[in-house]
Image (cartoon, rainbow, N blue to C red; front, side, top):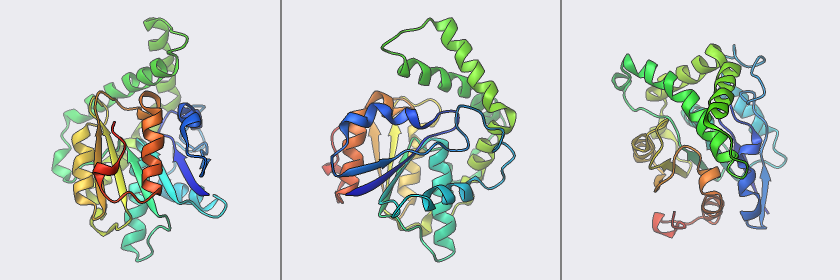
Length: 250
């Protein structure tokens, strides 16, 4: 039996992974914790200055430890920070592999321009609205209601929550990803407007054991848009698939 830990992003919760439930290989035991930056409110986290350390605590709580850690969006950046921190300290994170889903990453601090602040803030409620749309396909709701729900989710996260995300994003050029030898599959959605797929490609190219897979026609939430494919892809990582060509077709 292999243990997989699923880490949701900012403003979501563990239920984001539910569409994958019927697609896991029976040899997989899934852990999907609710993280401090969940959609139900972040009052206890919004002033936190070291979220990567909190993530370490979450992984330490997995009975027997994790074999593969799958992290989405904001959590993928925190996992990357933790991997780089542990590698730089000469104490690599004890996992067989990681899967970084739709990560935010820039290799050079000069890639952050002033206008990116406005773009990123505008993207956040739009991304929340897309999450709501994909999770309510079986009970369609009107655009006005969806926009209102997205606005409320954005307000729950608030300026402190969003700043915690953006501060982490700004630090990504400082991460010593060149020291991370943990096998890493980096997944980018071709249509992702929040975390452009080029960022996933650049990150994979800089990781010593990184591989990138682009998901055609997919946005920021492959666990909602391609749940079966994502579950099979995680299993392929567990099964030590050596080449990108061996991954299930997206």
